[in-house]
Image (cartoon, rainbow, N blue to C red):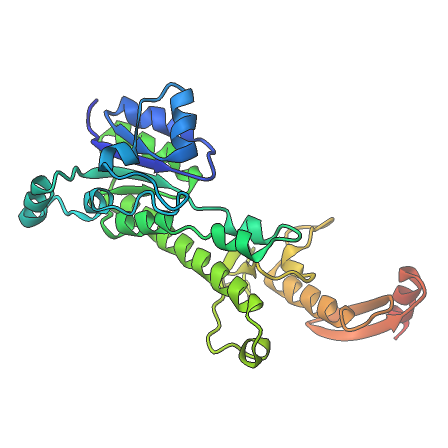
Amino acid sequence: MGILGKALISVSDKTGIEKVAKGLVALGADILSTGGTAKMLQDAGVAVTEVATYTGFPEILQGRVKTLHPKIHGGLLGRRSVDSHVKQMQEQGIAPIDVVVVNLYPFEQTINKPGCAFEEAIENIDIGGPSMLRSAAKNHEDVIVLVDPSDYDRVLEALHAGTVSLSLRRELALKVFQHTARYDSLIAGYLESQVASSETTSFPSQLTLSYEKVEDLRYGENPHQAGAVYRERRTKEASVCAAKQLHGKAMSYNNYLDANSALELVKEFDDIAVVIVKHNNPCGVALGERPVEAYVRARET
């Protein structure tokens, strides 16, 4: 079709990447890529131009600097509707980049590995990836930015149909800033846990939290209200939000409150304990040598 110019692909999570790359090529895109992504695409028969070849500047510092170059960020940030931008890009030999497919170094997976060394965690802080994502998302009217593999198919379908709407472009840009905000919060949280000081071991000067949706609820506190459950993924201790439901219909908002109240009280005991809750208030608590014994005692109270 020839409706696209350059597309930049650089991913750690390679889910669906061959399909999206071939789909973009079919639409006329010239693929720019780096490192392992470039090799994977080349092995799959996709024509790729290495970013270092395109920019004329090699990857340096053991890969820490790959895409931080004016020919990349100028191609992402230059506004096609602004004559001065177009003129400067032409003068500097900067081609517009129409599509960006980027996801980030697996920082969260790295720090969650048993025995993760501080140096390994630091090396898995992505710099170039967030920079490209943010540049593309800022200029989303001109650049389609993909950070979530679940969006690949619908964007390809939209491109084949002839256009990617502004509303979809804004939705994709929103995903980027949500993603990078969460990524930065994970890094800040990890570093906070590693810094030994009176401030960080009591209460931090800034508290940065990032929550992800677990599920939409049947309703909120009352039937006429909407509700949803979110969890903070950095939390390591037992949580109702991370629990597996074994029986019964989907939990309501009030079910979650009751279950959380029971769990948090049980966690106060070192011995086997059972807590019975009604309307978010404990109405039976007991210890026992065995769970069934504690349960019977709790019911009797």
